[in-house]
Length: 267
Image (tube, rainbow, N blue to C red):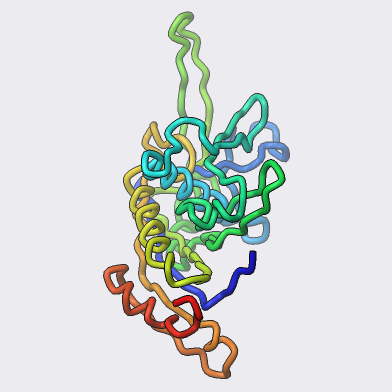
């Protein structure tokens, strides 16, 4: 299946932590006596960040659930375990590229061919989100004994024996902000509006849910503010001068789509 690129849509803005955020890192290299559950950090700057995989995975998960009735995937139809035998993780995934093209989930987030089907690469790329300059400066001054983060002490109580199980978790403090960026490939004009509206829905769902771990215990409440949506036709990228159309809201989506008209023979 040939996939044309008519251009790119760049969506950028801020992710603001309204409560402490925990996106866990591997504990393989933890020192003795260290925190039980550390956050993921940039290995160079040691600053916490939000992996693009975490943000994209949460967007996909919530959008699947929001559209499950519409797609007929409320049960196990077209679902696949991408986890392990002991830790199953089920996602919706189409078996062929042809099915994925018609699916609002797989069209955006991609699908891996199953039963001999072909892969359908994702139209959406989600960048890692890093702390803003202001947040780096602000978090550098906090007195918690940790770099840019805070301790959160919790205690699980066995309901039968009353035995305590204390643990220490690391969190990015409330008030921290991250710069985020999404890049969407415009491949045809017939689905771009639906795809972008579904992306907006996924973002809204995160703000009403949580990001990262332990959301049911108050972690991960965030506000996601879209500051700019930019449409860049591929013809512009080929020229010396990049011509882009910028909008501030998806209510102006029609003017953005107009940017790509005439670039597709199927439009």
